[in-house]
View (cartoon, rainbow, N blue to C red):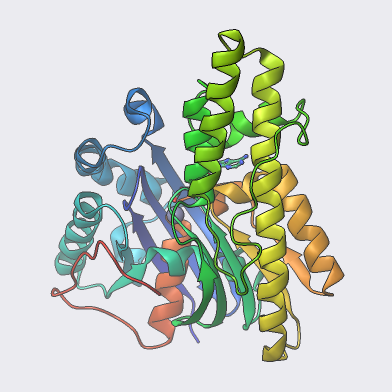
Length: 346
Ligand code: KG4
Ligand code: ZN
């Protein structure tokens, strides 16, 4: 197949992003990847505020696309297609991206390819390492938590996932409860490094139930109770209390993710993949102890473990451009009726 160069556009959560990716067979090259994060805009609210996110995307998308093309040293006429996240996500942001992509496609006559944001994450190990199907993917971010078997560009089966909060959300809420800075993942991980994970006995939700489903919202309740217990007892938290709470919380998340990954790998084994692999994506994949646990679990199962570089694990548009190329190669494309979808299971 001929080389393809795609522009990717991402605006489904709190990162405004544009990227240019060139693919030649299984080889892919990221020519540019611009990510304009909104963490500072939402910091005061303890979470992403949809209205603020939508406005920021609308204001910044044009410039992001311009910068991505400029950094790639290309113009619109050098492209072979435009890929855009069409869902799932916060609808205001997704709409901004889809409208811009439609405008660019209409103005240039380039093919338009709507991409599922989750497929973008799930296909990233093919962009970075040319990973062969079928592989097992654990997607763990602030908004998502699921096991997928990836069999093709548009062929995924979901083995299970969180029935409530995503792990990143649990990290963020833990940080909020303990007065640590957002995003909570890195700050809780840093505190946990000096803490005693055995001081507080936090639950391991759903480990006693079969299957790959998980739950993380109970953990937050347990943490709240432990914190309030300490405050009632001695009027506040010491640095060591905070570290121990973080360590206990993180140890519970690690154990649940590791055991559920073991089970997902057992299901995946039936695929009989020639080169079996477990890949992770999502911001939580940045967590050292979580990565280490998954590495051990994969090793024990005789499966390759793969974690893309962090800037490609978190939200970005290179993964969208790449997923667009994969979909386009498989014959997928969209017309001006492409709609933005707040919900869109893989
Ligand atoms: O993939 P991502 O950038 O955005 C989406 O949610 O789509 O993931 C962000 C999430 C946040 O909840 C953040 O707290 C979490 O990933 N995170 C971490 C770490 N770094 C980021 N969680 C645990 N440990 C980390 N080191
Ligand atoms: Zn994401």
